[in-house]
Length: 192
Image (cartoon, rainbow, N blue to C red; front, side, top):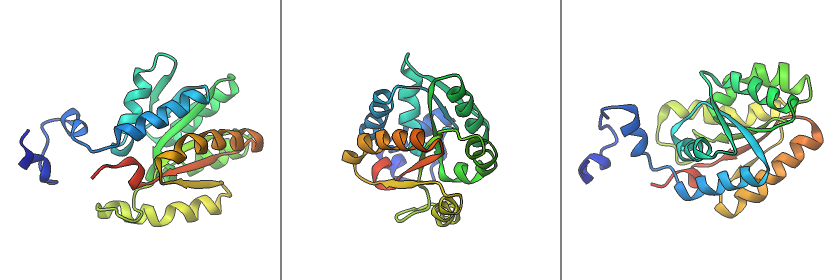
């Protein structure tokens, strides 16, 4: 692929794999996230892969200590993570904020109702710096929806925040027996 091709955002890719291989997701910060999940003894990661999280997903998939479960829609991931918790395993969800919005029913009627400590790592599309207009509406709704559901959340903007915030998220989710979210910002997950 020539440099001219990679500079053209409207370039059409031959297949999904070629497209994902050219996404400028931060490999360094993905490694930090994966390392933090391992440090928290996460055994199961449920996800619907998306571009900002592609490197994290790849690392989890290659890790023999983790089971990666790819779902067709994010609400399924809520049920899978809840099942892992009930079986005594630590789980994490990797999702885009649009997936978070799509999975509200599962979060409310399963995780909140039955007091499941659900840890959600959410790529925060549609916030400042977003270049894709289709993500803008979801970005505006993400934090208001989390507040409306009384789900504690924090934004992770710098690499030095990754490990302590992920550990703190698991601690809060387990002590409160409730869902908690980390919003992974563009500056953290994307390398322009």
